[in-house]
Length: 212
Ligand code: AMP
Image (cartoon, rainbow, N blue to C red; front, side, top):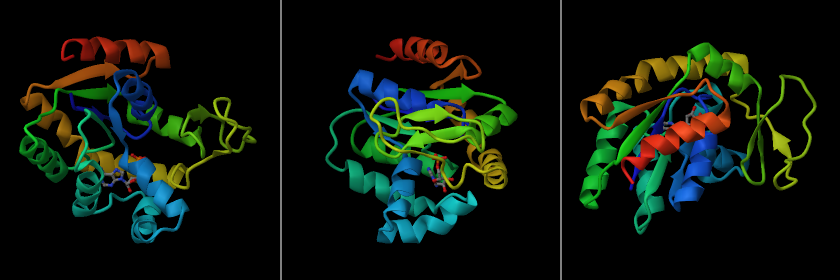
């Protein structure tokens, strides 16, 4: 089974993706997390993408597609795509890549949350540098340690108001069109993402039951 989680940055899809992928024994593909990790480690890939990430622009399609293909060439498990695809070109390339593996998408879960609410969540978001767990802390508040693994909590450099606005605009311009793309393929299921985390998990689990 292969699934896409679609929605604004800050709509909660990353938190749900980590949980659901683990529960279902799927691999979690979150290019944003992978790329930020490369930036922090100052690898050649990190240097290449740093300007895109820190300004809130999408990295070129070919680079994301290369990442996907390199990472999963030999992967046999189902993949949960979180924050990918983000352009029509990526969506079409994903369909072609899956089809070349005699696979397809089973469902696309659309996390419906108003833009302002998503932006507010990003402003308060902190993540563990060790295990990736996500927490909320008001802007400017001191950061404690991760309650799951004790790792250091950090804010991402792109979770600041000016860059958040840019990321929202990029979503509207380039990613939002995927809602109708997947609706026309009849695999889109919408969840109300303005609910508490557990209530969203229940909606996602219910949506996925029909394709399991
Ligand atoms: P995210 O953590 O999903 O908000 O992604 C953080 C950043 O990584 C984005 O602002 C982009 O610069 C880059 N990125 C993540 N996923 C993609 C994608 N599918 N296509 C292009 N750029 C991406």
